[in-house]
Length: 110
Image 1: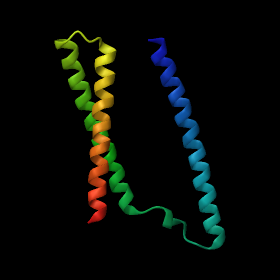
Image 2 (image 1 turned 90 degrees about the vertical axis):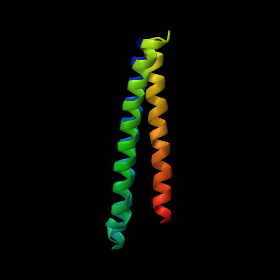
Image 3 (image 1 turned 30 degrees about the vertical axis):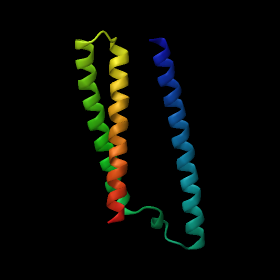
Image 4 (image 1 turned 120 degrees about the vertical axis):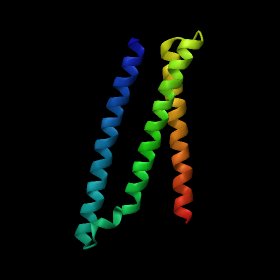
């Protein structure tokens, strides 16, 4: 159990560091655009927000399905709790993200 906590702590620290660096780079790009007199709203399109919501929605649906199937696996097989829950959450969360990718790709072609 301690290993799982350590992995989550490292993931949180990595995610926070990545987010801060990403925000600083975006701010630097926007400031350069403003200095050149270009409108900074060119970096963000309204269409991307719709895909972000789709991606999050399908991810959460996949995680929920993974939790349900993980609970079924715990009750019907000899798998331990951690293996059943984590494997199903990551499997169905990943499937949700892949589905959102293909839906987004199809929508962008149209």
